[in-house]
Image 1: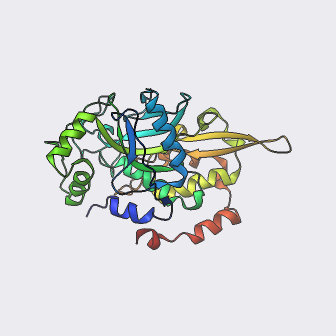
Image 2: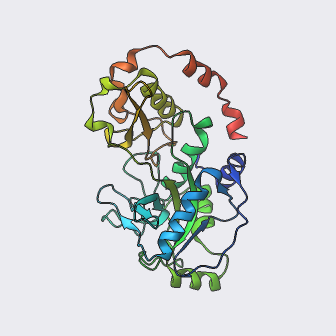
Image 3: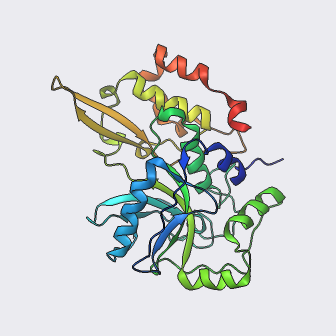
Length: 307
């Protein structure tokens, strides 16, 4: 039996983090907008981010495809032309129908790692945020959205090919990408609508690969390790941990870590290799957990998360 994240479970899990967003305003340009997916509410922590993206769209700022990566990852900018959010469309994941980097395939294709199929990564991005209780590990606020912009690659909803023998997966993908009627289908195709994960853009001083690992406190490395083990992360490389520096009142520098890119998490296989987890080679990984980390681990309730 294959286990895949369920949008109904996501909706139930995120209820305490989300608030109703009743504000409705006229769009200056109806061909470019961003809204919450389905009946999901806007996370409190993403309300301002969503507003900045809308204002950027109103100023004619187009989504910018990042230079690296294997999937379609777009920087959405605010009115000041600075990145405000990261958008990852479901149909542009690696080995999905609209991948912009020549990793094209039908939904349900095997991704770069066993246990994750194309069309599942953006849901896992949201799950990672929802399972990072109290923001312990620092996963940036993430949710599912519907984005419309005429610069997006055209995606035809009819005759979508899905290859998998898992009915649950077929039902999940169909419920996300297939409009309820043909009239809505024509409207979506006309307006270039995309569905995917939206994550707050985190300003940083670069990735951890640019630093010596000895510069970071034990708890900073441990908080990433706790998250990765909880999610069974298959892709914690040196480019997926950002470094943010802050000056303390005493003038010393504090460096905090921000984990990103969780599309290859929560797989349906336990084939995790040591090279998947870069922190295993850090000296901090050999140190005991602090009382703070042990308390967090003790309070995790897996059954509550599932139910």
